[in-house]
Amino acid sequence: MINKEAKLSPEVFKDDIKQAPTRNGYGEGLLVAGEADKNVVVLCADLTESTRSEAFSKKYPERFIEMGVAEQNMATIAAGLGISGKVPFISSYATFSPGRNWEQIRTTISYNDSNVKIAGSHAGVSVGPDGATHQAVEDIATMRVMANMKVFVPCDAVEAKKATVAAAKIWGPIYIRFAREKSPVFTTESTPYTPGKAEVFWESKKPQCAIIGCGPLLYNALLAAKELEKIKIGTIVLNNHTVKPMDERKIIEVAKKCGAVVTVEEHQVAGGMGSAVAEVLAKNYPTPQEFIGMQGVFGESGPPNEVIEKYGMGVKDIVSAVRRVVKRK
Amino acid sequence: MNLHESKIRFLEETANKIRKTIIEVLVEAKSGHTAGPLGMADIFTAFYFHILNHDPKNPNWEDRDRLILSNGHICPVRYVTMAEAGYFPKKELMTLRKINSRLQGHPHRTALPGVETTSGPLGSGLGQAAGVALAAKMDGKKYRTYCFMSDGEHDAGNTWESAMFIANNKLNNLTAVIDRNNIQIDGFTENVMPLESLRDKYESFGWHVLEIDGHNMQAIVDAVNEAKAIYEKPTVIIAHTIPGKGVSFMENDFKWHGTPPGASDMPGEPPKAEQAKLALKELRTLGGKIKSEHE
Image (cartoon, rainbow over all chains, first blue to last red; front, side):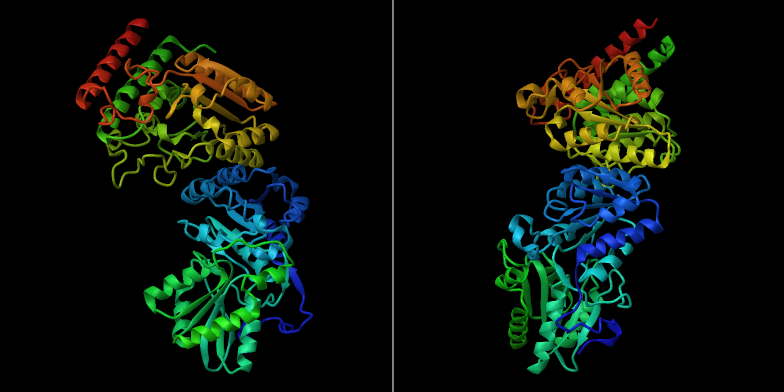
C-alpha cells in the first residue's frame, strides 16, 4: 500500500490523475531559482520553448543567453560562467546535451569543477513520434560515469521543480533529466525530497521484491505494485531519484528486506540506474535482480505509451519481472 | 606607447631565460611538447611581466585579468613563466608530469591556482574565455580576458562556434591571441587542413584582426593596447611565431611539436643529453645576441 509518509497525491490511482511533463517542472523551478539567486543564468541552444526555458527568458532577459544550435559551445561558455561566480543552467534535448557535448562537459565542466547544471530534456523513448534520433536512452550512463558529476532523475513535474531548485543551491556539476511527454503528477509539494535520499512510495506488509525506479516510469512501478498486491505478491516501491550519489544505505536496506530487486528506468539497462543499483548490491548484499529498460536497442516513432510497451517497460512487464525475480530467490 | 629600451631588454632576456628553463624542465619530465612553448615564450613573458593586471601572491584576486590557455599542451611555458613571475617556487617546475605534482601534463584549474581553466582538449578554450568575459560584463567588472590559442585548434568546430558567439555578444573585453606557428602534430597546418585566410575568416565573423611578429615585444604590447581601444568588436591578434624559437634544429620542424628533447622515438636526432646541451648552448648564444643588441 501507499506509504502515507510519502504524502503522494490523493488521486494517485485515479484514471483522470493530473498530467504534466517533467520539463514543465524545470521551467517553474528556474523561476524560483532565478528569484532566489541573481547569479542563476540560463543558456539554451535554440530550444527555448520546448525545454521550458522560455518563462525565465521573459522574466530575466538579461540573464538568459541564446546559444543557437551549438551545444558544445554552450557547455564551454557555461563552464566559463560557472568559474566566474555564475550558476548556469544549460538547456537542450538530452541527445544533444549531454550527448553531443560530452567531452566538453567532461573537461571544462566536470574536471574543471565549474558550477554548471545540465538540463537534458526529451529523455527516454516517451519522446514518441520524433523517433530514436531524439530519444535519449544513454544519458544516465554517460553522466554517472563521470567523476564529480551528480545525476538527478525526477519522477514527475512537481519533483522536477524541486530538483531544479535544489540543484541551484548545491555547488558543482549536476545533470538533471527531464521528459517531453506528459506523465501523471503523483507527488505533491509535501512529498519529501532531498537529493541523495531515496524515498519509499509503496510498502506491502510482507514485501517479496523491491521495485527501484526513477523518472516518470516510477508511476508504472506503482501501478505494478498495486496489481501484484492483488495476486498476493508484496513489494516495496522506491523512488531512487538521485542516481548519483545514490542512497546506498536505503538500496541495501530494501534489498535485505525483500531479497529480490527489479529496477525500472526509461534508459538502456547497460550502465543506467539499474546497473548502479547492481553495483551497490554486488558489493554489499548480492541480490537477484531484473532490469526493466531498453535492452540494447534504439527506440522508434509512435505514441509514447505504445513505444513504452513495445520496448518492455509497461506495467505488465514490471509485473512479470517481479514474478520472475521472486522465483529466483 | 613605446616601451623603454631597458624594458624591452628585460623582457627579451626574461623570455630567453624562460626558454632555457623550458628545455631543462622538459628534459627532467622526459615527455611533453617543445616547439610551442619555445615559440610562445616571448608572448607569455610580455603578458606576465608587462601586460597583465595580476598578483602572483594572490592568484584568486577577483579583479585580476584572466589569461586562459586553450591549447593546454604548451603549458610548460606557462608554468615556467608563472614560476619566474613568483606564483610558486621554481624548484617545483621539476615535478612537471610526475606523480603528486600540481603541474599536470595538461593544466588543471583546481590543482594549481592561477592557471584559470583546465585545458588540453582543443577547441574549448575560447568558449570558456567567452563565459568568463560575459560574467565580467554581467557584473560590471573591469578585468580583461585573454585567450591564447593554437592555430591547429581552428580545425575544431567549437572554436568557430565561440568566435560567432563572442562577436554576436560584442565581448570587447576579450582578446584572443593565436599562436600562428603553422605546425600541428601531423604536419604543417596548410597541409593537414588549410586555415588561410585566417584573417578573412575572423573578419567575416565580425572580429577586429591584428597580425604581428610574435617575437617582437613592442608589437605584442602595441597590439594589446589597440585591442583595448576597439570598442564595438572583440579583437584577435594573429601572432606569427617560430615554433622551437631559439634552437635551430627545432625551429619550424613539426616533429618537435609533441616531443621533448632527447625522446627515444626521434629518429636521426642526437642523444638526449647532447641534444639538450646543444639547445641550451644555442639559447645562451641567443642571450648574448640580445645583450649585445641592447648595449
